[in-house]
Image (cartoon, rainbow, N blue to C red; front, side, top):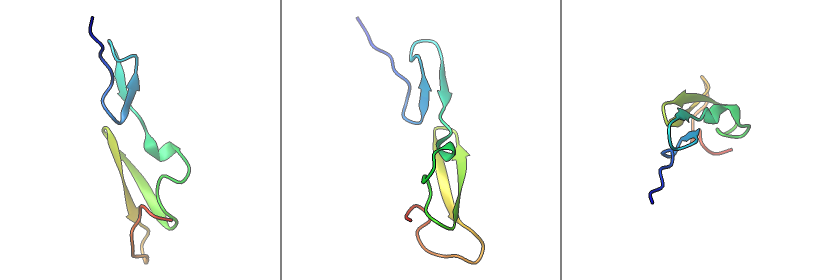
Length: 58
């Protein structure tokens, strides 16, 4: 027996099909005054213009 599963950041049946999870669709992924950018298998958060700090924290 063997078990296949999708890599972190992906969802699917793990056997034939895995697709990227858009983490940006979930509320609170990035901190306040930051925007989310979905990437393949991951995401990044960046501060809005005029803001500094850790974009991953509220």
